[in-house]
Length: 293
Image (cartoon, rainbow, N blue to C red):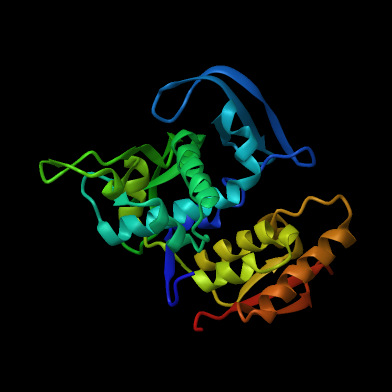
């Protein structure tokens, strides 16, 4: 992972506990298959996996062929963060980002090898197809920078992914072709409107060094902490469970999982934490992050 590098992520989606959460058998979500549905670009999907989380008005859609990739949806978010970072670097008026799979891997802290580059390519295709129905999007801020107007959209992040053919009127040699990623107009509008969440890449690196079963959960926490305006953040135990995406039916198992993940991130220097009693007698977690390394 590159040193002293920060990723940029749209703040609302960095905070979102459901958008990049994998639907599994043990969950509090409705899910099913649907035929002949439209994606965010009004293109027809012949058969799509559909799910909706309890307490969330949104619906999530992905073509059937991407179902095997759903357990890696945390990688999809890392790729989106890399794409978003590139957008902030390039600021393209036509929403088209020019990059390479290797550059995305470097930004996201993914080792460069053929298998990982193929997974990044699949993650980009996933992002092109991934559709959120009934997504509330901020369209206008007040003078204090708070949301003033919103609209409901069938939402997506990427319009298309292609390969560069011509540059400066000349055909590009095969070994110098770049990947073209065009983000959607609603996502570009949101990026122009709001300041991003800044994720120190060493935070993600620390999360990836935890035991494998903890990695996706720890990354959820890293993205949420990066989007928080308060430091320290203070959350009820139920909120921490929701952020981490812990689904064990036993409270004691969820509590142990929280402590293991927080202890791992604390040992890596990402954060310090304390636990105090809330007014309802249940634990409240106080998390203070560290930016410098």
